[in-house]
Length: 183
Image (cartoon, rainbow, N blue to C red; front, top):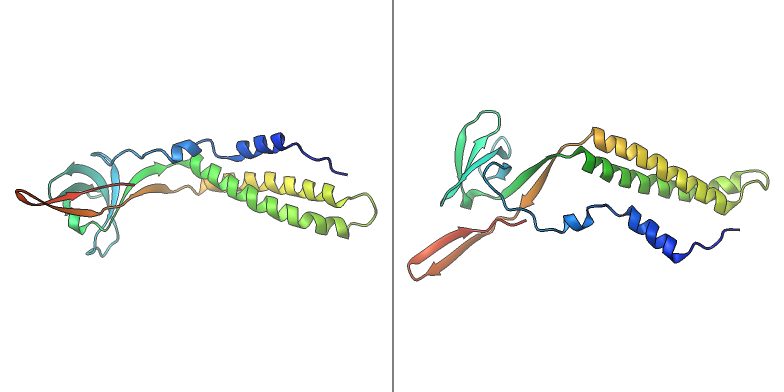
């Protein structure tokens, strides 16, 4: 027979399962600045997004030094349809994410197959709740290990996307144009 687990223990386990940086994910991102690696999508691109290092903000657009070739190009704000900043390759982040996904997936598989294994087992040695807990825990641990290893190995460059609304205003001296870059 399974004993009831106190609600406080479940609350501590649920809190421990949350990512350690949950508060940091909701923090305001730092603004885009000179020296950041950016990916810019414009309407007239044949080879894909323009990748490079942001070298200057100008009144008409932003100047970017292209990755690989070193060619600088000023892209008008009106032509920017997509903008993202590189966060780099964060292996620890992707390993943690892979571990969570793997633990959840194989833990669920273990919890579902536990009763099937227990009912197919001959004899009174196995009990359905004990088998379910055992296969669920084994699946969680194995899935977390496999997912973490795959996440670390297959990490790729992460990008923080920015919205690029063009803001037009009419003041006492005529029309003015401004761009608001936000996350």
